Image (cartoon, rainbow over all chains, first blue to last red; front, side, top):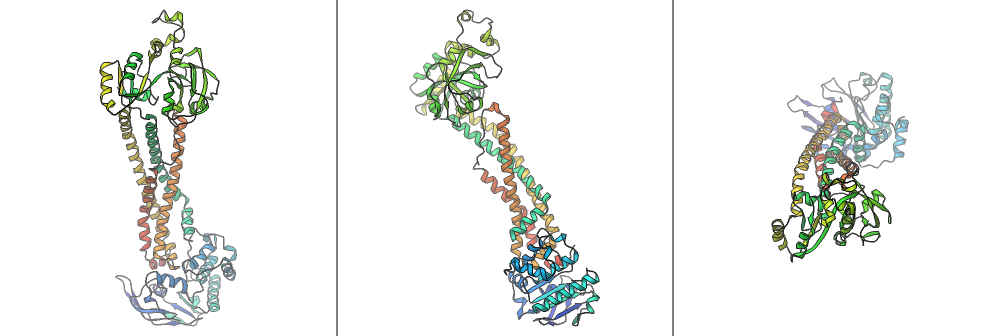
Length: 209
Length: 414
């Protein structure tokens, strides 16, 4: 589903990163761990096409990301990849519902308010849709962030430290929810984290050095 | 959706938005007010001029004569004798002359003795009633009727001079026989009657006429402190004569002839008004420069607002990019915000300038001229330049948003 080959990246004037090859099948969860500075977030941005690798490549659904130029990569990302962040930021001036509509607008995938309500219902945030993001609790924000990643039903879900800002209970809930939603949709889930709590629950792990 | 983001963002920081809009509104407002007033004054001057080639009056300041006889804004320079007037009337180059005799007023509106050609010159139509036919009948201008409430058939006494507290000529009653439709010219502000009426009013009573020059009771009292001409009007004089030539040759020869061979002076209104507008132009140019400076500063304020917001919204904008927003769309978002601020500012400025006109209309009754609130063509340039300022101010923030390093912005959720 998603795989990398001899992926390399170097920030201007910085140490080059070389990442081990890996793949992630549909419905599979892959945990990528490593200490700070090991290039976890860099790897995630490479997988999402936000950064362009200096060597090697990323294939998603048989598409080499390097072949996508300009706005094509933006379109591809919005349709094929759902991103979940450590602290789910939103467009502060828009309601939660409008924030959930953003991916469908930019990905040009029509989503009815009804579909979004259904999704919000599944994630337990139906009551927050008309609120502004800052009015939500941290747990609700994280779930809204997951909902936003799922709006376009992407085959790949990438999560950057999705649980490290949450306490044990909430962290556990959020991760379960993420895994459950990915499994339901047959999506590949790649989680980048240094959260040791997750290491205990995920089988496939990749350690970065 | 993009519109939602734009409007949402402008609403999100209302004070930032308000400051930018207020500054833009202030500068465009001042400029719009100046443009509107200048254009309207010039148009009004132009309209009132109506092919009056030459104004004849007593010697004095030519500008005063023109302001007094054409625009009825200034005091008269004095009187001219019928004898001199006849000389001009008979001159072969003169096509038409209109006599003007004034000096009295009612409710500070000028009463002007003239003939029907004066009304025809401005294409004025009667709203009600008829033109004056005999002495002491008057036709009132539209504004006069509106402000004084004078009705057909109503009578009134005139006041000597222009001041509201002048002596009142109580011996004679004027009677309103007609009301003019609005002409948007000086006629709106005048009360018109025959030249004979003015003479009649100032006819000294028999007893007084024998003691001319002495101190009297009643209306002759003013002799030493008011303009003499009114008193002398009793001797069948005019205050001014409006002249139209048969050919442009007249303008070459007649002024010289008048100035050299008569007691009158000849003033060319077009020339005098150009001089006056030129003088006024210096003042408005200075004010316009000031307003332009404010416009530039407000453009700068829009820039700072957008730029600061860009720093604050870095993560948010990166987020949009990660959700599939294209670079160009982000650029458009930022430009659109500047554009929208400019439109709001211009709209505010337009409103402000109209409030300004209303205030001027309210406070300067003495000017006897109501500014219209219509759109002045030059304001289109103002709209263009304010949109340009807004767009330019947004250009650098928009460019920075376009070039943003999405990865770095996302990795630094400050």
